[in-house]
Length: 202
Image 1 (cartoon, rainbow, N blue to C red):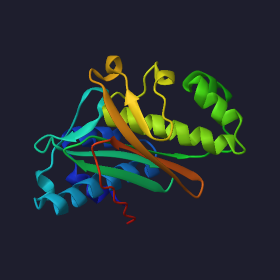
Image 2 (cartoon, helix red, strand yellow):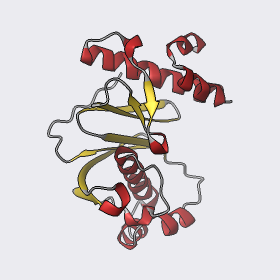
Image 3 (cartoon, helix red, strand yellow):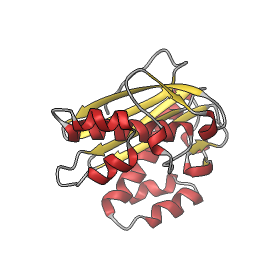
Image 4 (cartoon, helix red, strand yellow):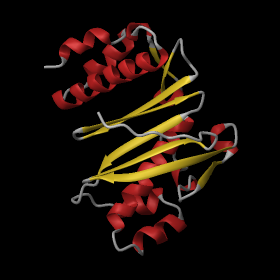
């Protein structure tokens, strides 16, 4: 149905697109890339076809010819979340709060002791787990690390969050926003230098 949008993809993106076997995953990938180009071109006042998406280590996408205009993408179920930031890095994550998923091992293996205590002592432990999980994912994606075997060391509590210099090659502080959309949890992470945040629903 949306395959005509594949004409907007670069060769690298097309290879990634063709790796998706599930039709819904293919459609989400296409729509995400389409809206990234559309919104970016409107903001920067340039031709959407002028954007060439390349990838850093850990598969973080960026615009090859506009490296200071940053974006990040996440999708789950019927939702696609895209974060944009001019001059600063940004990371986003959305997850379906699956009530059938056994979370015990993920809580023990991925959360700090403080986070474990917050989750297990909460009145809604599943929602609190997904809040912290999406916060970690968005923060790590924003920094450009992706998931790491030291994920327990990346605490994502409310307020400013410090990325250890031995993880990211430089120390930086980040702000994270989290909210729920029905059965989905969303987190957006950005450098603490960002002062204005705007949210749009298309």
